[in-house]
Length: 193
Figure (cartoon, rainbow, N blue to C red):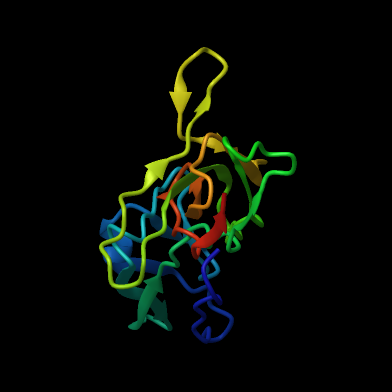
């Protein structure tokens, strides 16, 4: 259902008939119910990145006189939000010569989507003014011996092993959704191995 019902004033109890025109009709995504409510057709795929609004008119007849109302349907971009800034801490009992870091984060807001997983990346932090290092994708075994960078939707922490002692690492994470793909990266968290 889209917004309020479009409603003309019937004349002498007469039934109004409604028709969509313009993009609302030609897109094939919308229809109007007999009482003037615009709906999205079953199976219609609306993609904000492709088209963010549809315009047209609702035409109706009152007492044999045709009239029209301009209508714009604005789409809302459904994208997962940004996960919380990761907290990065040295793994308890980590070997001094072979340190590891634990990174934890709070879930990204789904914002009307379904989060299907997360991706994480890390890099060695450089001094201010220096060119940042390239990010390294965090990968896990998918259970079939293949490395994948997609973490499960329930994952909220990972362990980064085999790091260089005394080095500070930066870490960020983003949510994945089936329809919109990748959400925005979190703010950067950091920790020293």
